[in-house]
Length: 326
Image (cartoon, rainbow, N blue to C red):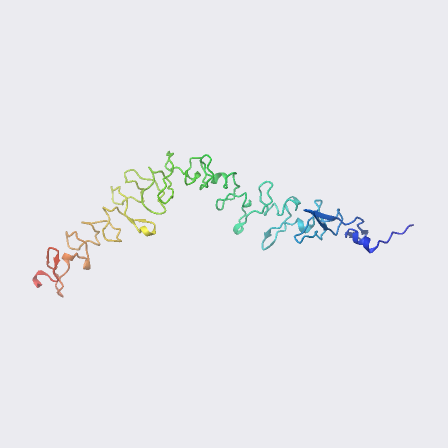
């Protein structure tokens, strides 16, 4: 019986590193190539992992599947719960993919990019394939950057729209430029104000109350072009409410200019004259503005202590005392 030939150290160095109790693999080590560069492996072509690591060296691990990769390179490169994901790479093929199909790889057919997970929400698609509308999880509808429901329904327009469900005439299915009037049956484009902000209604139906952002309510019949909210509260009046706080974008009072108290900052209804009950002179039948002590300048109480008579006045000249104290 012949004895097995003893190999020299040089011959052993050239053999595959894989070994079992029955003996060492008899095949020679393989050299991997990429972009014209050569990377010697510790294993033969049957046992080597085909992956070349980021340090420009052949992987030191042995393959574990018929695709030719080790356990380390078959695991998803994504992160989960502050650690590396334990799922396997999509199709068990590190040559084509880096992430698992369960949670990290974009679900777009053929895409190998990582999907978005802002604040733990699975958006299913990578930024290249997910609709650019905020929080939308639908795929883009090429050539638009948005999905079908968030792309303007106007012909050849690729701009963003709010994207509510409904037919093509739904106002929310159009971009700012092509937005249609929300009034039932109207097919006009929405009104755009001088600031470039569109209304929900066209020029014939939008509320004309001046505020920022513009009012999105529709006009009411019998008014001066305003909605219920911005129409004077006086019964039967259809005028527009007075606008206050223009520096803050505008706010509606309760009444129109004709019915609102003339006192600055007061939103109450006029009474006898141009002022409300609170700001009208307390003397009966006087329509002048009330001042100190709720009386107008002409009807202020005599300046003499204890006297309850009104001060004497001559035209617009008001005395300090009543007629009897002069």
